[in-house]
Length: 340
Image 1: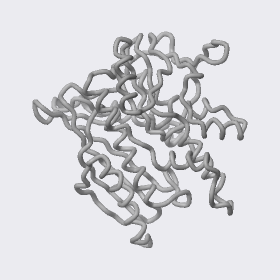
Image 2 (image 1 turned 30 degrees about the vertical axis):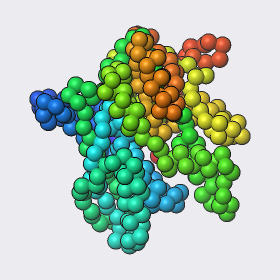
Image 3 (image 1 turned 90 degrees about the vertical axis):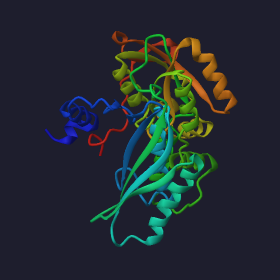
Image 4 (image 1 turned 135 degrees about the vertical axis):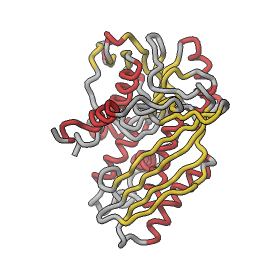
């Protein structure tokens, strides 16, 4: 068997099976958005890491090095947000070819540091190396959370509401636009397309809201939308051994995405289901706490949408479409090794 057959998620399961039972100091180990370590009676440490590989996760021809740096840190901050934690520091591993300009490296760090200042996260170290071909950026973020308050993927129960923050599918559409426009001479895209491109390059990690959901104990399970709703909802359901019903017409899409999808003869909800790298939060809430969650989001001027409900695992993961027809969710999002 080769990795193209096994797939990214199959590889992760294979690694997890080979790891011995976790030490007592580890509250949350392999299989969630981040690991959680017990540091003291008053604090637990959150640790997460992500790699950005040239020609796999980004293409310098599509954007600036500042945008690439910003997004590399945003992806990791979103993981901490999904655990209900507060990020406070990060480290960067950077491998680049020797022919890379110093200005390009400066711009990568400029992008990361501009986002870090916004969230009061300090760069505390890392490593640099020469690369024979292409760039690799590996970011590790450290966060903290009160003992027992980390939100995992596995806490959802039948009857919980399913929520998402923001709008979905914008990043996927933005990347699609960039790929289509790569060889065109026209430099300035229409306003709606510019919005989608910005959403691809500058996601907004929902750190403050994720922290609130964890601190108040409102979120029973949570995951950030990095792989796309179709895949990440499946991860959340598998972790909690539950199913879900999602209402297709309730999936939140932006006006620019709706207009773009119409022009392309495509379905905006399909972008919402398949689209990766929105870095919004997908979370579940007990019915009794739903009003409090929605009121808190409104005070923060943050859009949250109830898109469905958790059901017993025997009912699977389904989507309710036109006319109330309920069908199994078979769509899949991006997965390393299985996608070219």
